Amino acid sequence: MDIGIPKEIKNHEYRVGMTPGGVKELVRDGHRLLVETHAGAAIGLSDEQYRAAGAEIVADAGEVFSRAELIVKVKEPQAEEYQRLKPDQVLFTYLHLAPDLPQTQGLLDSGCIAIAYETVTDRSGGLPLLAPMSEVAGRMAIQAGAHCLEKARGGRGVLLGGVPGVPPARVLVLGGGVVGINAARMALGLGADVTLVDKSLARLKELDSLYGPALKTLYSTSDAIEAELPWADLVVGAVLIPGAAAPKLITRAMLALLPKGAVLVDVAIDQGGCFETSKATTHQNPTYMVDDIVHYCVANMPGGVARTSTFALTNATLPFVQALANKGWRQALKEDPHLAAGLNVHKGHIVYQAVAEAHQLPFTPLDKLLKG
Ligand SMILES: NC(=O)C1=CN([C@@H]2O[C@H](COP(=O)(O)OP(=O)(O)OC[C@H]3O[C@@H](n4cnc5c(N)ncnc54)[C@H](O)[C@@H]3O)[C@@H](O)[C@H]2O)C=CC1
Ligand SMILES: CC(=O)C(=O)O
Ligand SMILES: [Mg+2]
Image (cartoon, rainbow, N blue to C red; front, side):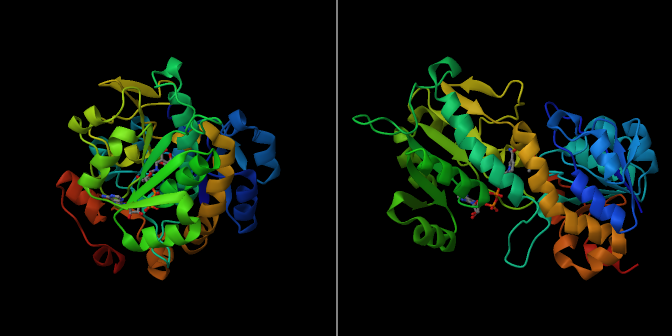
């Protein structure tokens, strides 16, 4: 199969859909890898390394999209990319369609088969292709938050770990999944005072037994969150209802409860954000102020540490790319319901219920389409 790896074009996005190591495995399986020139140059992955792994280096995105049967990317296709997609072409990447009607419409119009990394599942109910980037973003949320708490960034001038004689900052983490626990772990490591909120009691029990009294846990209600806000220096938004728009856990009115100069890091922004005042920002302009509260809402945080992220992402995606390429998408999805859960758009139909609901568009059940 011809597999295309275009260079990412989103603002400050330097990740690549596949490392040279991943390319080598796919070439060994008998596939032709079309890698756009300079796809990994910004993170030290040269065309020579891809060539040595067996890839064909292709001059531009137009050629990658016109020749490949399967496109493997990182970020959701940008407008100029979804216009290049063709009927029956398979796209495997992050999509985050629920908050993004133009992209959803673009994919429907293209007639492609779009499989989203973020809705592929695993046997234990996890999201194995979201997890590596959630690990990265969760850890980065604390670095970013610490930076934003500095006065020059609009923050209240608080050091996360405090110093002897001065108490540490208080960090509130909303959502105790992969992002949340990685954020909590980093914040605890820096010596901050950390409280984590989740609506799953089972998850809170699990985290309590792992971290003991170092990590305070709270069941998620709006009262419980409101009671924490007057003390919070940094709030990390890390909730997820898979495929759906994120619930708004902090409204604009609730910002008044926070100390001036407190920082909100909304990692859940790619699903629309879990603070009412969140709007997506970029690595170039990551923050803005609302009511004296710093908002950091970068929708592709792992792109900031693109080298680490590229290797982490390929580690997770490679077996699925191999399944799609070796068996063909239809057989691969028939054999693996967890990979099938990644299918969001199929030849002009939305096949992921939460996406259809988010846009009030028709939903077509997947089994109906896979029977053919
Ligand atoms: N901005 C970025 O660059 C990145 C964003 N993300 C996003 O971060 C978000 C979180 O991802 P993961 O941690 O992997 O998801 P996850 O599924 O591992 O965890 C989500 C947690 O939220 C909890 N939750 C759901 N509703 C809640 C509520 N009302 N109150 C409290 N907790 C609630 C769930 O019980 C679960 O424990 C997703 O939207 C994901 O797309 C992930 C990576 C990078
Ligand atoms: C998960 C995601 O959207 C990202 O890594 O950018
Ligand atoms: Mg994202």
